[in-house]
Length: 454
Image 1: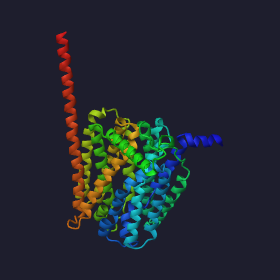
Image 2 (image 1 turned 30 degrees about the horizontal axis):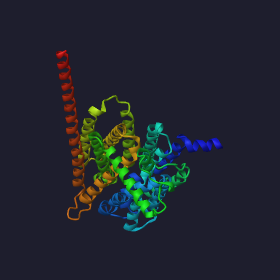
Image 3 (image 1 turned 120 degrees about the horizontal axis):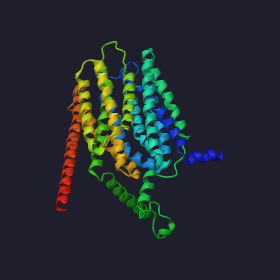
Image 4 (image 1 turned 90 degrees about the horizontal axis):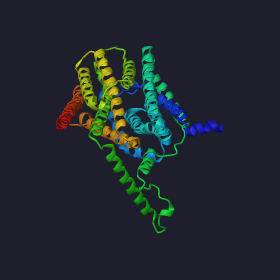
């Protein structure tokens, strides 16, 4: 028994299994691909206009406003409490969806959903506080894989049940049942003994004593003075780490793609069900769940495959990001132009698979060029930038009363957004190649001159 307790505290297998199980049940939501039909159907009787402009934007604004406080509190309270709260927030969201009535209750459900999304930082960061650095690569792949597998299984299950005539209400009941398991699983997680961010700041800056002991503080020093000094030290350390995170042009461009890509993906995927509804023939059986499941699995397979590709990413990485971003932009544009629902489905599958592939490339490129201790801070900053960009897009494209852009125009803007990303990285990739070629040419000339002088 003592041996098992010791393994729980010091090993990486137990916390990884528990966290992955939590992630699987958190993402196993058969109802999610069919949320729009549920909201505009007889269960909630909302209009497409209400869902698009008054319901879906709520989670974006909630996510933005709560992301920074949640990020800081997650580290202060050592991750596990936030992971538990994430499970509870998801349950509350689906309880309101199922049993609430009227527009306000649906908006409250998406408010809770936005909080749960902000709390995902606890899930992402938790594992780094309980395992040794040598296991980071494995546990990262396992925890991300659990999310993708859970989402794919949920979508596939939802599609099968809808095909057999199961009601959307029952789909949401099954989703609530799956989400209700996750908080109990999260209670099994070992409590971390360290803070990733504050511990990292302390270990990298010996002069920064985050929690100075009484022997080093004058007895006349008031508590407020001590807290002010501590706050200044933390702020200074964060500034140092911020400079480390964005110390090179490569890291800046990779972070730029990560933030812009995430913003565009969430904006497109949040409203794609409304687009599918507008293109579906009458009495058409929706295949939203099957499309989401297949695109998730194909994206996961592509992400796995890219890890085995032998390529000099420091030379060709930006061109790859630019080229595939251009294809993604074309897929979004075609998805908007076509009137055929099957072509629309196929384009979304291409887009989502490419996004997951490119996110994987960006993530391991950032990890390769960054110190491990800076992961949490960079993740928080890039996520905040992504949600800020998404909020600006939502406020401008969807909620601006003077514009009231139709759905087709919105998707032209999203296609242009990814085309802009593609152009930036294609130009940057060509510049990197030319710069490298010039350096090689200069080195060759210097070598020839040296041999001639000898």
